[in-house]
Length: 277
Image (tube, rainbow, N blue to C red; front, top):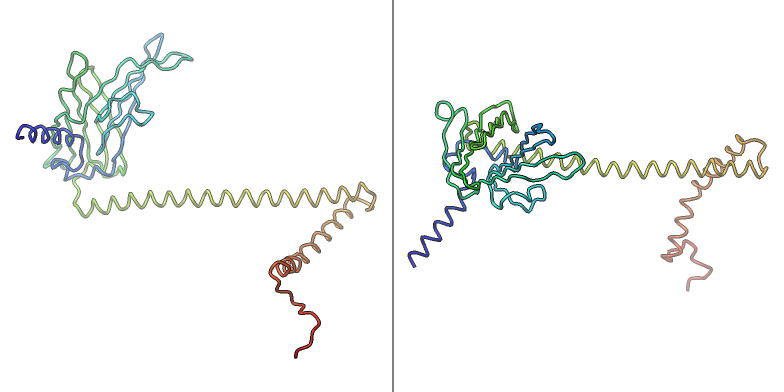
C-alpha cells in the first residue's frame, strides 16, 4: 500500500514538472502573457542541401503531437527540436528529433537584483541517443515589448540556449497581472468582433454589388431590346422609357405586396355586399 502511494506521488510530481507558470519560482512574473507553443528556426547552407533545425518550446503548457505541425515531436514535451534536410523539389527529410520531456526536473535562477531583470529556466540531462543534452530558456524583462521577441537561439550539439524578451518577464504584482491579462483577453475579444464585423460587412457589400449589377443589366438590357425591336428612335430614348417603366414598377410594388398579403391572410378591405341585421 505504502509503495503504491509512493509511486502515485512520484508520477504526480513528474506530471507537474513542466514549464508551469504557477510554480513558486515563476510566481513573481506574468509569463501567462506569452503562454503558448512558440517556434524558432535556423537554416544552414549545407551543399548539396540545406539543413533546417526548428525548436518548439511551450510556455505555461506542454507540446502535444496531436497538432499536425508538431507530429514529429515526442508527446508531452517542454521543448522539441527537429532537424530536417531540405532538398530542391523534394519533401524535407527529418534526420534528428530532440525532446525535453515535461517530467525532467528544472532549476530556476534570477537575473539582476532580486530577479528584476528576469529569470532563467534550466533543463539538464535529457536523453538523446547515447548522450545527455541541456537547455536554458532565458526570460528577460523588457517593459517596451508587450508580447515577446526571441533575441538569440544557440545550439552547440549539447546545450540549447534561447533568450526571450518580454514584459511578462518583469516582476509584476497580482493586481497588475490581472490588469494585463484582462487587457490581453479584451484585445482578443475586440479582434474577434472586428473580424465578425468585417465578415458581415463583406456579405452586405457583395449582396449590394450583385443587386446593382442585376439592376444595371435589367435596365440596359431592356433598353437594348426595345431599341432593336424598333420601338424607340434611338438608344437614349429606349433607355429613358425602360427607366420610367422601372420607376412605375417600384411605385406599384407596395400595393402589389399588400394585395398578396391580404389574399393569403384573408384580411381583405372589401367586406362584400351585405346588410347588417
